[in-house]
Length: 111
Image (tube, rainbow, N blue to C red; front, top):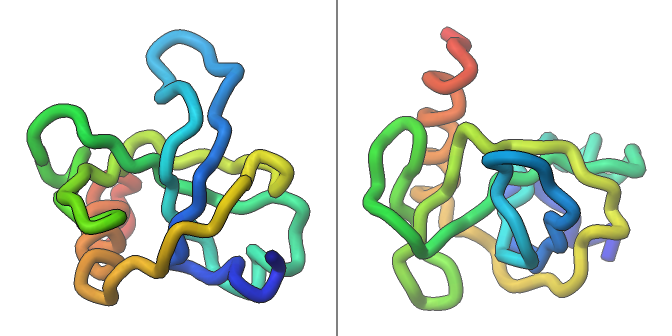
């Protein structure tokens, strides 16, 4: 799995247990951390994908996963242990990854 831990790859991730308003259950998540860090650390940064709701940039951004339009939930990024990753799904398109990057800059107030 280590060789696929590159930024933009989408995996099934078990996000439970959660608390409060955190996104729950097993769902697709995209790796948003730098690829060298993904491979060097025991944790990775992920952004959950959801089929619910409307896209409301920069909080949620419209992207594609498994042939469907979904929402990348940009304010729910989190560090997870690699043991939460189950199956690799696919690599996100460069265009979708760029949309996420722009939204993350806004959400995190990075110029």
